[in-house]
Image (tube, rainbow, N blue to C red; front, side, top):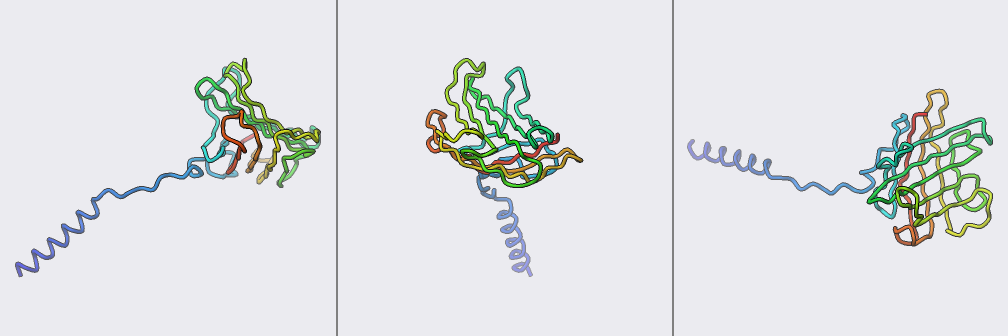
Amino acid sequence: MKRITIMIISVFLLFISNSCKKTKTDPVSPTDQLPAITQTGANTFGCLINGIVWMPKGYDGSFSNSRINIDPTFVDGDMTIRVYRIIDGLKYNITLASDSIKNVGTYLIKSNSRAFFVFGKYKSDLSIEYCSVYSSDYNTNNPFNINGFIKVTRYDLVNKIFSGEFEITFNNTACGFGDPVKITSGRFDYKL
């Protein structure tokens, strides 16, 4: 009987010691660090720039670091999202915009498209421009070889929610992210 009791206690102690060991946790992937893809009006924006998490951050003394404007009556449905991030005295801004948006759907960003994209890198007081990349909705010249899309997944003026996803690729080594620059896993969800 003593042997059985000792054996049961030994197995129990072995089980407890194994369960108390620290488990190795997997590192969190960059995509998992972004805000969730939602359609609830969570007022979120985020993307990966060449695999690095990019979300609005800081305050430049004038406007919020993340804002949206929707005007369904202007140019058959106007949408503009402006966000910025301040890091070490530099202000990085992203603008996504399009006219002719009144429904959910995918809107291409390229030469001669109605959707457009602007990326800039400035001193936070905007005195020196380090990089400016743009696509133009009315210009056939696309010097940065910009291609991408804005996918509107919820356009709800009754509940005042505008949500979607985006991806963009462009060439410009001056922006400091390498060449080409790949913006992936982009998502936004705004309460209007």
